[in-house]
Length: 130
Image (cartoon, rainbow, N blue to C red):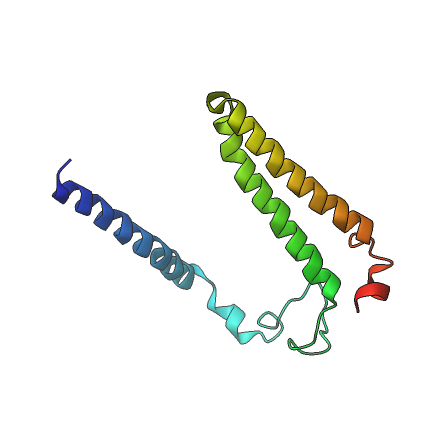
């Protein structure tokens, strides 16, 4: 493969990456009914089915929501790291198995720590953290 083919392929990819979102936004603008803009109820913010939202966006959330979000990210990244290990598991030998076991043990120790601290117990978390 020569240099022109490589750069031409990258150019086409970048062109598609820019053209597709703009094309979708243009199609949405052309195909959307304009009558919705005249109705104030339809342009109002929709929050989980609540018709009357009280408060503003700068209010503080309890810390328990952030803790659960961080836990979700940790265990979501666990899956992201386990998938390539599962693909290469048969080719890796015992050193890959040892690496996998150390990785899983560290995650399990972290999970047992948060369970023991009661982070996942929603009824008692507000007493300790807030």
